[in-house]
Image (cartoon, rainbow, N blue to C red):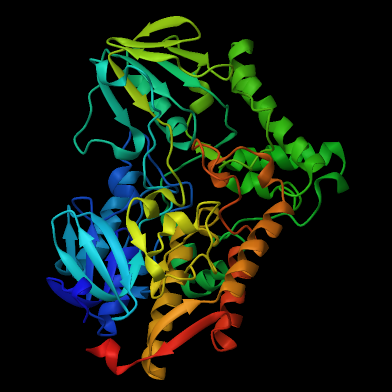
Length: 544
């Protein structure tokens, strides 16, 4: 081993993150005898659901589908209490998995990985942590999630504000009491839409600052019934297999008709029925809502009319009705009484679309030339998605090339799993994979299985290095963008496009071709001898 890699410990693999990806990776690696260290910056397991503890936090994928499928006993024993699970229960589920498979003994909590450098001579990664430890590993896996780096706007006067500040993506673990307070919520994305109805019930007054209105659909959440639970558990293997080859990694009732192929009366009837049922199945009302502007316009106007109907004040209702981008091209939100909340006397909406918040003051903030006083300010301002958490680690591959430099014009991956010049480094649900445009647990399992099977393949063939080729990576990057450009997604300034981060390159980061299509592509690549990947056999020098 070279001097660069003299470390306090040596393992086969280092995993960064102990969310759903890290837990399943560790479980699979352990069963295969792959020695592993997991580093988690949080105090326990859970990933997204460890950090996002804000009031009203809830999953927008049905509970019976948002769970692991790799163990039938686990599927059968766990019981969800609601159709759409709240954050505390999902976190409890993650803890149950960690306990059931005794995973915590290989996880270092409250430790952040700060750097990972590839040594070409040793063919190993030198991984450094903020605790001062250095670990040598053959494989380095970033299981850090797609939306785990909270983004707070750089506002003048922030440090001088005397009240309390919170970010929905980094919420305190103890209950926060807002009773009798004047609260500001900045941002009306998914977390804001979930938190606002709950905060409004507790605060003396709540003021929402909105830059861009969001389309949101009613969840119609209900308690889990024994009948519905068994409709899944009795046939879980078959349903899971269907999910794996579905469009989004979850089972939804999708209409195979184009929107304009039916009469106006039938179209409105379909929209109304799906609005009544609730959840994201609304976007499946017709098969061209996300590819045809004309079809999309009909769905968008239906939702806008629902907002106008719900919100009693017509001015507020119009401000809440999105008009500048197609429905579904920003993350579609699912809510519990969001629009109804603006009918409360203690809730105001402030439109900041014309100009951003000017500054913070010791007792509040200034927007549109007016001063507002607040006891607490909640930032629901989202994340540096897809790449932000990867860039928080100083990752350097061949020739000391920094990942951040290679991705200066946008992320470059093969399958969203690996990047050329960064051998033996894997990303779970990375840019260029279905990731955030899918049921994340289903996509996580597929990626973990791909990574694990690849390492098994390397062992069987006597390889110790795996890396995508430049040509394969270039072709995949082009394919991801070409696929996105066949849809309406690029027409929105969304975090899918990096548009929420100043200076970030604008390109569509997830793969929108579908979970099932993506899975088949991966299967074909493996079937063709890992087409697009290059391998290097073990050498005596690398073993020294």
